[in-house]
Length: 280
Image (cartoon, rainbow, N blue to C red; front, side, top):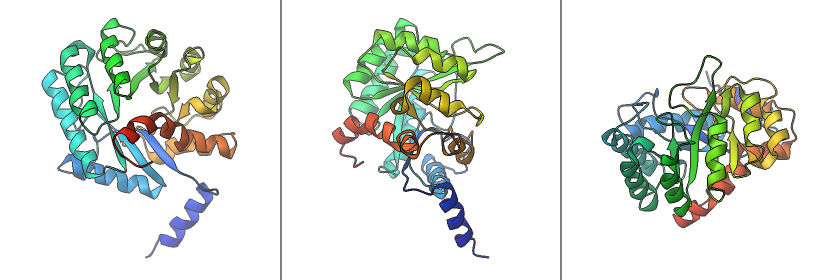
């Protein structure tokens, strides 16, 4: 049976106006495929079904809370291989660990300054308010790279090195010229998390990861303005569809949806993409 007409009808219902979508948060872990390239191909195939044209991807096929320098190198090589296969559709962020500062700086030089990657990804090895992140952020800024930091507020308590939105706001105040993306925007208790960024204009709230709860997008837009909110899915850990639902089902106008779904991220990445000759 040919499902194409049905899919076309669904897309028309979902996207009744011309729409471009850039996903600011995806992974290779959890996807089928023997190689990083095969996994990214599968991710892009699924993304295309929902009209997602470009994705940011990071952290490789194996995750560690506190990766060694060797594990960082392996993860970043996997992502680099994958994005070099799809250079106009996937943008790599280099995964770093502040507990291994020299190795992290070398990874940024290798893959961002001298390679194809466009951002820096930090997870849960050390809370980002720590001064150990300062050289990492400084080098990222020198390379025109954005810094995407995992942020979360768990009711049951965060992991020992897991950053809260308030940690990121502290880091952002120390580096007012750098650009930060708050992954998950304080996921979990996002109503608390979003408020942490009201006085840090260089932090952009990214919506990925948490359940598609009504009001999330509206609150982010109300507190931070429509130009500081970015769509991300956290796929394949979360589905593209449920995460898109946060934006498409939000009580915001079509122009705001366009900003959140693509234009804001495009603007952040434009300087480094232009430097690397990637058309936007």
